[in-house]
Image 1 (spheres, helix red, strand yellow):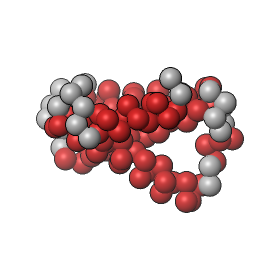
Image 2 (tube, helix red, strand yellow):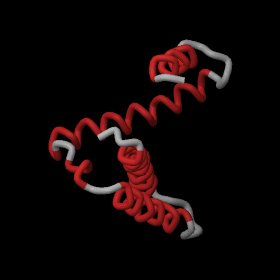
Image 3 (tube, helix red, strand yellow):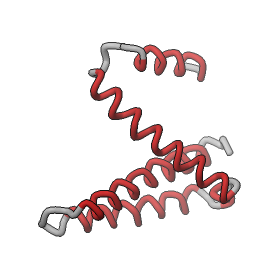
Amino acid sequence: MDVTERMEEIVRALIGGDEISDDDREAYMEVIAESMLIHLDRERIRKGLWKEYPAKDQVYHIRVKADRVMRTLEQGFEMTEDQKQNAMEELIDIINYSIFAHRILNNRI
């Protein structure tokens, strides 16, 4: 499946495909949009600095951020709003680092 076919499938899903519910579609796209906005904001500042590092470094950052989220979740008490917000920010970063590593491994930088 080429990029055009993949994009057509995504567009069909976004405009009402039956693969997932409208609520799931909206919630998923909110997270994807947020990760893209964070990426754009950081690109304005860092000008693609991530491209200078190999996939292994990107995955290292995923591991560090995932560990932070896990430690917060494993504390065994109700998370504060600040802790939730921080965990969600770490998870958005994980999405972006995953995309960077995938692009590097796929020679798309």
